[in-house]
Image (cartoon, rainbow, N blue to C red; front, side, top):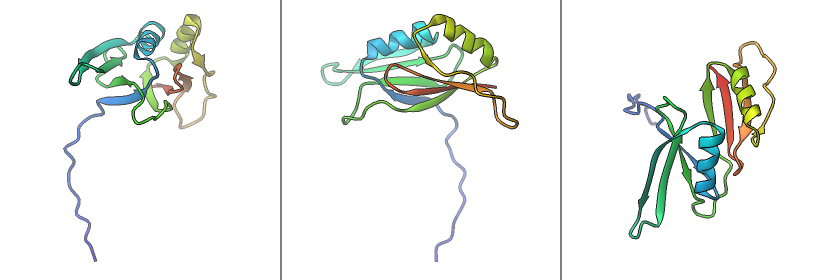
Length: 131
């Protein structure tokens, strides 16, 4: 018989979420011009600089989104949630920007936050949630 022993984690934050994208430059364009994210890191690594580490994030966010080429033949399809103080205003802004696969704002449900979903050109899902 084993005994479960609780331990305190040393993990403190969610820092980086990984999204698979077919074209890092196209993804960078989408996230910066359409969604208004800023570049947090863009560097080359590997023996001959053949790999690229590219991070973007909403202004002021401590969490970042890494935009990676497919690894091990895996396509896109990841998901992340981001926050806004005003879902309706952000939805209106993104609608005006255009060119975004954007769902309508969900109906108000008691106990659930207001939110809507969108998808990037690679099929990654982003849920925009009102804080």
